[in-house]
Length: 205
Length: 257
Image (cartoon, rainbow over all chains, first blue to last red; front, side, top):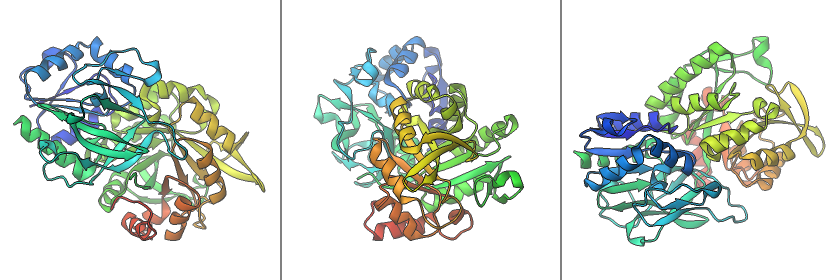
């Protein structure tokens, strides 16, 4: 059973359906008590960093997510749910502190002539390592769906699982121990995304 | 490399996909019923569509209720990005559609009537959720005016100025629909598409006028659009999404195959 954290994020339903399609049993959790004995956790997200972190804190899910990560069970953050794992964001003069699971901050794409921000659409992921379990059966160079203006800059480059080029090279996903997180939306990335979720669900067992 | 997107657009009237020949035809009973939105969405999903736009052309209270159901059903089966437009007038309306499974909401007349809606939506959901759709008509050799209410009401606004203003308020994407070209299959309006694309820092989706594969390539190359949106050529089976992408790839335009 996978706990899907519901703090009002817009993509909850899509994430839910995609996880079910990937073979998961899903429990939507709005409070820490509802996480129960979940074997995996997904933190979906879309929109603004501060909104996400503040809503999580209000529902006491921020601490719950941190505690869950400590158990060593698989955790997946998506988009803003990825960004929330870092220390802080530069978005709209953000003042909320993220989970701080990973060192580094969330930054905006640097303005460049002709570079459209947000990045909206399908871009390729370059596998930075070949042992990340959620990329099993996913080819290097696969297209996945992005929609974002910000991305985290990990202080430890060792956690980078994939890289993507958009004006600059950024960490499109990270992995350390039991924590996985993607800037792109696996729930919107058709077969590649479903494969990733399947791999995650398999880890949660 | 970020791929150029090919986006089928589904005009939904009372739960059915319809297609008028040109702006304003809906009222005259000139709509052709082309099928069930979810069935069509699944077909385009299989053809490799990069995204889908559902446009509620009834936009009545009843129609909106139907639309939520359409989006939920489409989102349950197509694991791809969905945009919803038509009749969205408030941040609550946006939230309803996002929760139903939409990734982006598109506003047009309501943004013209209340530009603050763009800012409110962007602050609440992020710019990437807020698409501003612009219906533009050439009113002088070098001037395009914005029309509201499905192309019926002149606003006096210059299309380039309005696009820039919308982006400054937080719009994360512009859909540019040429009233002159829409439904004609004679090609996109390349001039205004390029002008707007070069004037704003967000992606521009070209809409209105797609009739051939060459038109699609033209508007991406010369028009500098980031994506192409089309309805009739897909609904009536002239081309599949796959046909379009194969053609674009041959022209060395980056697409997701």
